[in-house]
Amino acid sequence: MTELPLFPVTTVGSWPRSPDLQGAQRELRYGRMTRAEFDRVADRDVEQVIRLQEEAGCDLVTDGELRRDNFYSFVSQKLAGVRLMTLSEMLDVVEDKAGFEHLLQTLDVPAYAISTPVCVGRLERLEPLVLDDYRFTRLHTTRAVKVTLPGPYLLMRAMFVPEVTREVYDTKEALADAVVRLLRDEVASLAAAGADFVQLDEPVLTELAFSPGNTRTFMCAALAARRDPAEELALAVSLINRVVEDMPVRIGVHVCRGNWSRDESTLLRGSYAALTPYLEQINAAQLVLEYATARAGELLAFGSKEIGLGVVNPRTDTVETPDEICAAVERAQALYPDDRIFLNPDCGFGTFSRRPMNSEAIALAKIRSMVSAARILRQA
Image (tube, rainbow, N blue to C red; front, side):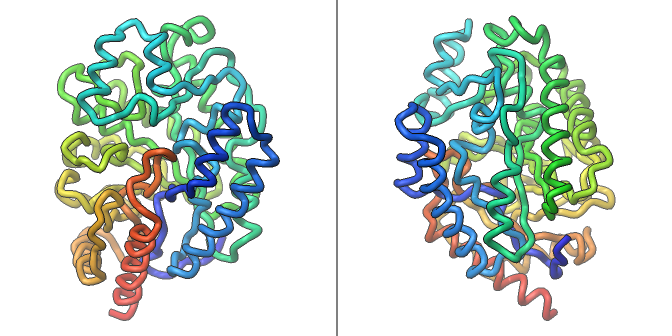
């Protein structure tokens, strides 16, 4: 494992895609481009984003999730039994069409802009989910490498659409068992290949904690009917822990409040306090949490875990200053020892390929500001 300095600087994963790459993703999806042709475009862009992170001073780099349409939909290319559907296409299969249309209209989500993977058959791995992407990244950097994966609860919720999934998996828990097996195989492969950090993305946990009653939010187009939120959160913890049990690699779990719109009024609001009993039970070294937005509430400690501290907001044009970032870290130092504080944005800069939260220039400026702050903190 690559040794990291104090206050390591990293990203949550995603990066804005170039117009060429967005075009290639579209051509690949509709069968007008081969995978080899797509990879030639993607390889070039991934090499570039690695160089940008290195030059900016990131200690822990990612591939920018550039090969993905979004942070979880890409599994449709890797798994048998999964169909990628735009939100408008999902209207053709869900029973509550009026409710789903209202959901999209009220949450600033164009139905054409975002796709989600739907389980339509038995899940089987056709190829590794991200292992090949990690190997490519490893070949092009000497820095520590973070690999991001959708978490098991997120995938279960996103992929279980009762109208089509129940033909193969009677319940979302049955689907979850298949998802856990797939993710365990992937994490084990990444650990064996030398990955420094594996991050599981579980943003939908906040939807459970903060949505009143049975109100649905857009969070990852999660449509699966839910039981009592406390039962669902316990299920989520169980699934994550089953995936990471005995894995010899640093595991992080990312939890945010949504990153599909720059209009913060459409995103979830609430303190992590509502999730604390569950987050403390997750057997991960690190919690990667957003704290650069007032919507996140007060800074909290979570047992002996590391914190991936969100210190810049990926959805704003304003670049946080090193002094502002240092002040945020100093507040965290009251709760965490220095060697358990990582610096990162609240979420990705390009979570959804066709709906980036910011430009590459602003993303780079925010990373450079984090790096400057880390250098100041290391000299303190």
